[in-house]
Amino acid sequence: MEEIRNKVIIITGASSGIGEKTARRLASEGAKVILVARRKDRIESLAKEINSNGGTAFSIVADVTDKDACRKIITQSKEKFGNIDVLVNNAGIMLIGQWNEADVEEWEKMVKVNLLGLMYMTHAVLPEMNKNKKGHIVNISSVSGRTTKPGSSAYNSTKWGVNAFTDALRQELAQAKSGIRTTLIEPGAVETELITHNKPEIQERLNKNYTNMVRLQPEDIADAVAYAISRPSRVSINEILIRPTEQVG
Ligand SMILES: NC(=O)c1ccc[n+]([C@@H]2O[C@H](COP(=O)([O-])OP(=O)(O)OC[C@H]3O[C@@H](n4cnc5c(N)ncnc54)[C@H](OP(=O)(O)O)[C@@H]3O)[C@@H](O)[C@H]2O)c1
Image 1 (cartoon, rainbow, N blue to C red):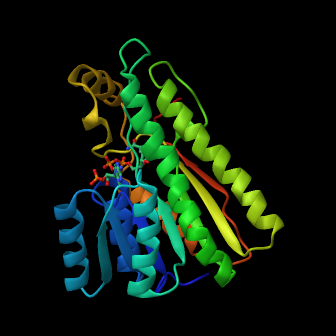
Image 2 (spheres, rainbow, N blue to C red; image 1 turned 60 degrees about the horizontal axis):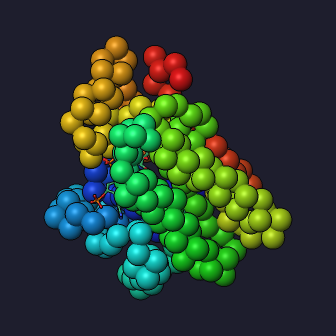
Image 3 (cartoon, rainbow, N blue to C red; image 1 turned 180 degrees about the vertical axis):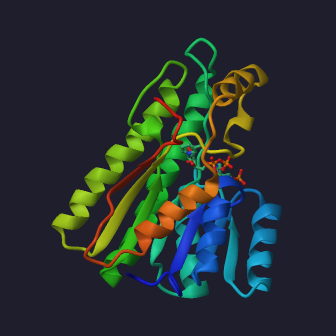
């Protein structure tokens, strides 16, 4: 097992849901966590709470769709805690709707955050990890990166993109014997704020799907992240697909 203690870990989308619980979990195991999101109040108070409970956290307010901001996150993290061990690309949005219910701007937003943001962060951190001959990139994809369904075409596209990017990158990094690992985590339905950014009628539709199912908790995904990053360096957990026990598709 590799110790999580003292690892320097950047988590995007740390202001709520999976990112927040992942930050709490990894900090509780002694990691130095860097919390990235746009909501300043949320990440600042989380960092304060972690630090006052004996953990180590630092918050950076940033939008991952801004590539200069992504480069700056890496520089600032390095200045604060030194070499970066893990990047958890978790920031994401899910705006559901069939083609005739969706604005093309919503599609653009999802591509920018879920796919381009993750690519910008990865591109910014790789030179550092490559220099150190070690590092770990954990990408939070989705069951929607493996399956498709009506109303989800744009979200599906972003998450399929994340899966393709991650596996092609894994091969490049393995071929180069870089020592850098990649992990793709693909959750099913998790109880978070994710659906609240949709139009009310769509939220209602999504909530109906969940009435007969016990959803995953964000802590369940944090647990998968902790597992993947604590394997010995020879072990690369390429992919973890996690559905609620009662989720069919
Ligand atoms: N919940 C599910 O059922 C589920 C299932 C499969 C996969 N996922 C994936 O899990 C990830 C986390 O989602 P969640 O369920 O935890 O939802 P969430 O609670 O809404 O969290 C999303 C996070 O992303 C951040 N974010 C959004 N746009 C951003 C931007 N432009 N720059 C920086 N941060 C940004 C948000 O922070 P700010 O708004 O403060 O910036 C927030 O912290 C997403 O990638 C999602 O696709 C979720």
